Structures are given as C-alpha cells and as structure tokens.
Image (cartoon, rainbow, N blue to C red; front, side):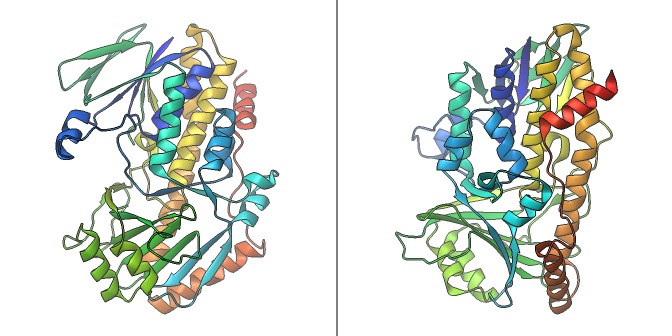
Amino acid sequence: MHALIVGSGLVGAATAIALSQVGIESTLYDQVDLVQAALNSGGAPVAVDFGDSGGSVVLAASGLRVLRTLGLLDEVMAASLPSKTTYWFKIDGSAPIALDAANVNRKAGETDPALQPPVQILRSKLHSILMQACHKAGVRCFTGKKLSGVVEEEQAVTAKFADGSSATGDFLIGADGCIGHIGVVRTAENNITLRETCAFYLEREKKQMVCTFKISEELAAVQVMTFNDPPPVEGEEYRPHPDLPKESARLADLLAEWGLPKNIEAMMRKSFRISPAAIYDLPDLPTYHKGRVLLIGDAAHGMVPNAGLGLLTGLEDVGDLLELFRHYQASSELSKVIALYSQLRVPRGHDAAKRSREMAKQYYEGSQTMGHFMLRFGIFLFNYNLVKYYNLYDCPTEVQKAISLAM
C-alpha cells in the first residue's frame, strides 16, 4: 500500500516513519514553498526541515512512548531537557505556583522513571530528527503542494494540488499542522539566568500571558500572547491583539510595560529569531475519517496549546495507527484500520480539547487575585494526589482492547 500524507510537520513526519515500520510506503506533501522561502531569506539556501523556526515543544509520557516505538527516543532525549516542574506566576513574577509534573505522570501510570518528567525540545530540532528518519526510511517530501481537492475511487484516492499536479495512493492522511510571537534566545551567551524549565506569567484581567521554556543550558524560548476581549470560543481562530508587535525590541519594550521580570524582558530583547505561531481551536469533529481519507494531528483536533496536549494527542494518533496496521496488514483490511482509528481517537481528541479549553479559561477568566488562588488550589490537589489529572494512554494496550471488542 501507498499513503499520501498532506502536511509534513511533526505529526505528518512521525506518521510516515510509523507506516514505514509496517511496510507501507508513503509520500509527504506540504504547502510550504521552499523557493519562496529562499527568496524571502535573500536567496540563502533553505534546509529540508523548512528552516530553524518555532520555539519549544513539550513531550509528555505517552508521546515519549510513541517516539520509543519509532526508534527515536534516545536521539530526542539527548537533544532535550527534562522539565520536572511547571510554574505559574503573576505577570510580575510574584506568587509562584509549582506543579510536580513528574509526579503527575507517575500517578497517571508511567512506571519508567526516565519518561515521567516531560521534556522540552526545540521544535525545529525535533522536526529535523523526524525528517532525517523519513529520509532514512526512503520517504520523499514534496513542497509547494497546497491541497485543492480530493477524488476518491473504489480502490484509490487522488490528491489534487493548486499547482495543477496530482498524486494517487491507496489512502490519504490529512496532517496539517498560540497566537503570539515566539523568540528563541542564547541564554548563556547573553548572560541570562532562567531557573525554570517551563513557566507562565499571567495577567488575567488584561488577557496577557508570557511563557518561557528552557530548552538546554544554552537555549530558551519566550512566547508573548495577548487577546482581544472577549476571548475566543470553540471553533474560532485565536487572534492576537492588532497592536502586538513582531520585532524583538518592541516586544521587549511591551514586556517592560507589562511589568515582567527583567530576565524575561532580556530574553525577548536578545532573541535571535522571532517566529509567529497560529493557534486554532477547531470544533469537535464527530469522525476523523471518510472513505479512504483520515485526519491526524491538528487536522483532526487542532486545539489551544496547553501542557503540550496538541502534540501529545497527535503522537498518540500515530501510535494507534501504527498498532492497527501491525494487526491488519492486508490491503483488503484498510477500511477496518481507518474505522477503528476514528473510533479510538475521536473520544481521546475530544477529551484533550476539553482539557485544553478548561486550562485556557482558567488563564483568562476571573480576577487576577481570585483566578490565581483557584489555580493554586487546583495545583495543590494534583501535587498531593487528591485529584488525578489524567490516565496514561498506552497505544498498544488501547488498540488491543478495541480490536478485541471488534471481533
């Protein structure tokens, strides 16, 4: 069988690697135009991983398990930094609240101590690891391919692209992958001290949030977000305030006006790259498939990025799909794979999106004083195991359950 994968971001690339493990060939297509990107950079060469863009992403236990199944865990862990504790502050850096993230994963069911702390990794580094693995697996990636239509036949599906070209395969996977601006800074080089690996600075009443992520002893990322009032609702794009600047110096001046600690302001001012990021909260879809087309990652369940839930859920999609193809290997069983995939992933995607929305509301609703108090109370419950945050999702176990029920 041959799969067409539209979208070569983190989840799309991981899907191609997974399919190669069960003997399914695939081709990646992405609307990113490398020729135009080279022109925008003054004619400089543009790397196959679409350049050094984005900030940090967090990988939690069930996502790390999928990467282990793909044979990439050691490489990812070597390029990342454990993030055992997550912090929340008021916008000025006062009133810290600390979540023992390793404990949350342990109580969720992760028995491997190495996988209990979430890890922070530069998005472009993770993408590079995945794309190199795709190359080793013989997966080709075509850029400048914006999907314009899909034609499904009895035994095949054809993707039509805006440039007039087309491609035909046995099935098609849609994997297109906050609002704010992400700056990446060399902390050691600029003598910037950042103690926390993951921290959020909140001003609820003014709808302002700044996030910092320590990626290594040398690199960190800082993200600035501010929203118009009222905040966005389910199914709407998270739009930034129109006056939010895009340059590091002006963003740093803005952080100074907001009253951020001096080291956070310096992180933005010394950033060597500013990348925009688009946040979507897609409506909950009733199914992730239709015929020979299935959706995976952000294409299926784009959500507000909180606690890495979007990427985590996307990697779980990959893990479930891989386990299903391990069991159903004949091309005649493709419809079973697609139907069971949707059956497994829809409730999981809905649950992740719900949790993400609830966290976003907590960040931006209520008064600064009462909102911070309620957050402190909630984190207290998690830290002392009075409330269980979530249950670990193990792809092989969940897929086997679904297969047994289907028999």
